[in-house]
Length: 232
Ligand SMILES: Nc1ncnc2c1ncn2[C@@H]1O[C@H](COP(=O)(O)OP(=O)(O)O)[C@@H](O)[C@H]1O
Ligand SMILES: [Mg+2]
Image (tube, rainbow, N blue to C red; front, side, top):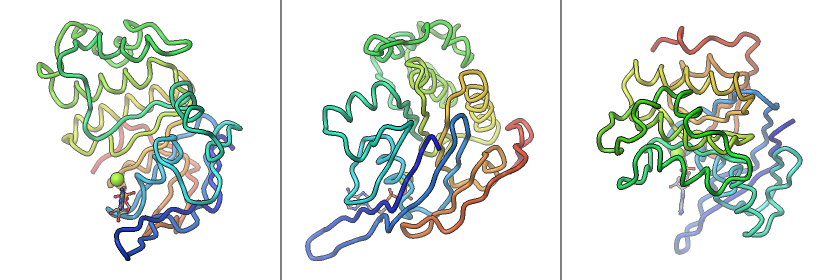
């Protein structure tokens, strides 16, 4: 398995109150697959994704990504791990406002070991003609395309998406999902995506349902639906 999570636990303490956010999560995802995490707000989805991506730490348990034992890495090693392996996409695009589209991509490609060509990636997300625009001159869907290009330019093994269509309307969301599916197919990138939208699970190889810190159900889809045909 490309991602392996075993008995993962995390809790937060505020004053005297201890909240168990992850209560022994177990899950796995194969190389080149798409996984979708569903579950209500506050169930621990982002915490799980962030620990897998090395931007948060657990209390106990084990996470392995492509044979790297993420939960054993030092802070410096985690930085390298993220830089070399992980692309993040969030609900809000976090583009740098005073840099052009092209420059937003180059900020990442400049520090990557084997980046893809900026123009090639912009072309893949349909944004090459907007290379010299600033983020404020783009629609929400276009900004998300740029943030996907920024995540993909370093040619990551794993793309982690936290509600990537959460701020977008139906048709724009579907375009973004098509793009993610295309990246998965063309670059062989493994994708793990959080969503509130049950319909999106039709495009995933595996679907995990989270409820209050646990994965209560894992479904393996025999048949993957093309994002083009997903309706909600
Ligand atoms: N830094 C933090 N300090 C205290 N509690 C937190 C912190 N981050 C998250 N939580 C709590 O952990 C729970 C799970 O959060 P999260 O993983 O963001 O859930 P989800 O993404 O499913 O909405 C929530 O109850 C949230 O309030
Ligand atoms: Mg969240």
